[in-house]
Image (cartoon, rainbow, N blue to C red):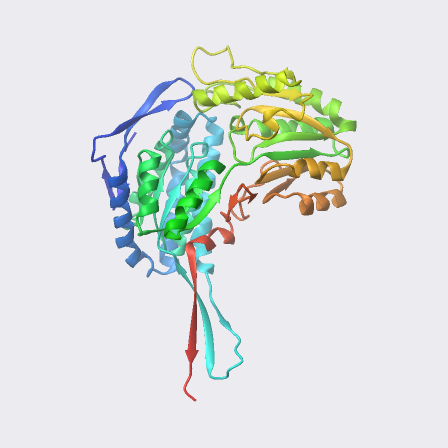
Length: 479
């Protein structure tokens, strides 16, 4: 790897305390590299650097800031193969998926390079002929970006690109287990000449880094993607400093498959969506409600497709499903399967850790049916390669079952009937709804959840708003 250090104030920086951390390949259980692992001191230094840089960066025009973002996008594309290989080695996903994530990250920077130019204020009408009211949009200040391990590049790209386009500066913290591909992104920032301090990268224990973000008044906003439990804690702590927070949290995405679709084609689409990144996706389909008249045909086809998926090291040719991310993910997956079976579920495919590999955290793609209401997997966010099949008969029943959760991130519908599609779009309590679309996320469309799945949106025009303050200016004219 070219760099294994943090990036603070335009320089690659080691950990002041000498801390280091191994990055483990989940397919081989071997170390990929060793990175510098800092702590609160490095987070403080990065915030200081970001504050100094903010005084200049906020004064740059949207066109000037956008040029840096476009150049970064070009370098990400140019280096996509190298970045993707790094991502597969540290995270486990198949190489094609890793390259796809890299390309979407580049697209995100390109999008926000243009979106920054569309930040606008307005003149308001007045009842007093001598008054004028102006609304201005200005950057909020120094922002912290915290991301998880499952999409180590694109989830940071959404935060960093939006904040820089808005005129903010940023301190990014990746998941401890997957820092390498983000380091590659920061190499791009360095090579395009991004001014020192505008974007900073720190690595270290999450508690220490978050303590500094929360207690240091320089940090004005925190954008977090991760679990609902951690998101709630961040909300509580942000209250002390009245810091703005954006939260993209847990999900439990229902899939509603109606009787007017081809069950075999629906099963193929469902299996592809479910087992992408081993179900370790925040918007991964997690509960499959099939119209009773199509349940048998759908189930048989889903089992066949799941069994044919090629499991293996993501660097190997033709692999469709890589390893799970870490041992405790394997343990959780097995616990959810065993508990579901205990309360009546049938295992139709998979159901256990793969025995085909000497090393690696591989779990067989799993299909369950006959799930009772007491199965934990129906209420607990699974983040696992498990496909639970259930059924419904009436449209209102389907909506009620789909909405019966604390989460509201994503939902999916398969139907060829326009009335059904509209009723689903209006009735489902989710921030993202895919109608016949298993991959509804796009840079030009807002991404975020309802209920306990989060606050705020990323991507699209909505994605830049959280990084802006709205200022009202009143002018009194001379008579």
